[in-house]
Length: 287
Ligand SMILES: C[S@@+](CC[C@H](N)C(=O)[O-])C[C@H]1O[C@@H](n2cnc3c(N)ncnc32)[C@H](O)[C@@H]1O
Image (cartoon, rainbow, N blue to C red):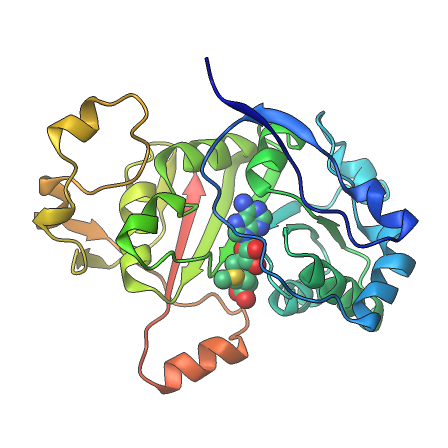
């Protein structure tokens, strides 16, 4: 019998409008890729939520969303972004690529307020937001073969080994992503954590419905034999966490791509690059 519990994101504090975006759903328990960080929603972000929420914030629902209707009848290509943080990158890409529509998901309330504020300041019309767990949005609201692209930038790296199971990019989640992409649609990820970049690469390279667009060949550097899954782990039905195989450790793999020009360099990323840290972009096409 699976464990079932009530889940949901705490409603924004005390304002009537906010409850509309808060949905409690009953579902099978699972490991989450995020923790809801404490963080105050500023007055400006709150104003943006109150004023622009009704137009740009789509409430979570447990049935399929009509994407064309969600973008005021637009038939432009639909790109999904997962975990937009404070939304600076999302707003810049939406402003640059006006011939596409962007559906952006984040659980962190101040981030939602911040991006709504950017929508207002930049007069963006091709962006819609959902404040909810992206896994459930993909499962419940997005139909198979409905997306032209997916962006996942700087997903939480969960540095410690005992937390690796919380990383978003795992075999099953990638299957869910791929099912929502149309044939020929793309998947673009970026990370500044080498070990996570290698995990992404190994998980995505083994997904048969995806083609890695990179031309380079790389060898795994951050995983070792101690990370390989044991026979006992593999025998468990509940074992879902990515672990490399011995063969993967010693083979060459199709690797990374240059940062596509549409993805702006964030302040945080720039600081890291100046300190000599790496950033890895991965771009795949669905067959
Ligand atoms: C490290 S931040 C990166 C934010 C942004 N993409 C950037 O490049 O600055 C990762 C974000 O993903 C969000 N996140 C993680 N798991 C999520 C999920 N399952 N659904 C929605 N958002 C998620 C977190 O709340 C966090 O804001």
